[in-house]
Length: 188
Image (tube, rainbow, N blue to C red):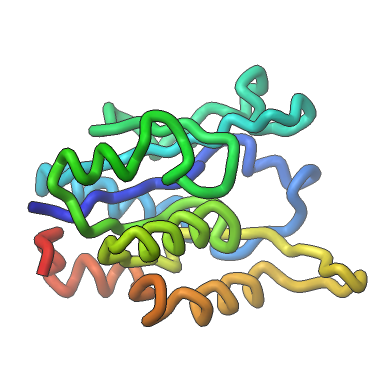
C-alpha cells in the first residue's frame, strides 16, 4: 500500500492577481512539481482535484481559461476529482470511496489554497481516519480581509493553518524533508 498524493486546485485562474490579491510562497508550484516527480518515479497513486466554480465571474468557472491546470500538472492521474466546494472529499467521483477501494489509508495534501481547499481536504481526511501529511510549502494562499476590516497576510493565514492542522488533523511537513526522509509512501 502507498500514500496517495492529493494535488488540490492547481489551476491557472489562481494566477489572476487582480482577482485574488497578493499571494505567499512563490516556491509552491516548484515544490508541487518535486512531489509529482517523486510520486511518478516511485509509481505511487496521484489524484488531481479541479475546482469547477459555479460563479460565472470566477477565473475557476469551467467556461474560463483559468479552469485549466497549471503546466506542472501534467500526465494522467490515477483519479481526477472535480468539485465546487472546499473539500476534495465532496467531489465527483467520490475520493473516499476510491481510496478505500484502492486500499489506501494515507494521503499527502498539497495545492491551492492553503487555508481553504487544502486545509478543508486535510481536515475531512483526518476526520475520515486517513493518515494525513500536509505539505505546507507546496501550498499557497492570498491575503484576506477579516470581518472587522483587518488585513490578514497570506503568510499569517498559512501559519494559522499549520497550527490548526498539526498533530490534530495532519502532520505538517515540508517538501524537501518529506522527500529526503526517504518517505517511501508506505503506510506505517
